[in-house]
Image (tube, rainbow, N blue to C red):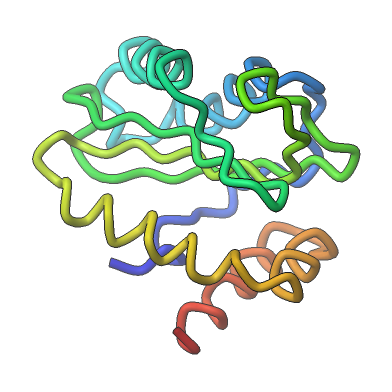
Length: 152
């Protein structure tokens, strides 16, 4: 499963307004509200928030992967938020610039691990993270991810 296949133009926000982790997660999750794969947005969001309370999803390097494996999703979904100024995540006391919010049906554990692993591999490259921070629009952002996936 390709990360770039999951990203849709309307699910990429390159100018997050929130400055705290909770607000930013909500803002990015909202991009998935109308996605037909989300059978209950409220249920999905509640599980996303609960997961963040159990253990932070900050990875370092200004990246976070808020995620939930839930029955409120019927196919994997992905939304991205970018904050040039940075979002403070109290749970890890880090500043995050890129949030990749993932929703996965419970039965798709292997696909979930594939997507998360793929994101982690490509985002470890500082040049790629910089390119994503400089992407002028959602289409360019998705194209950068797609090109990076082909190299891995």
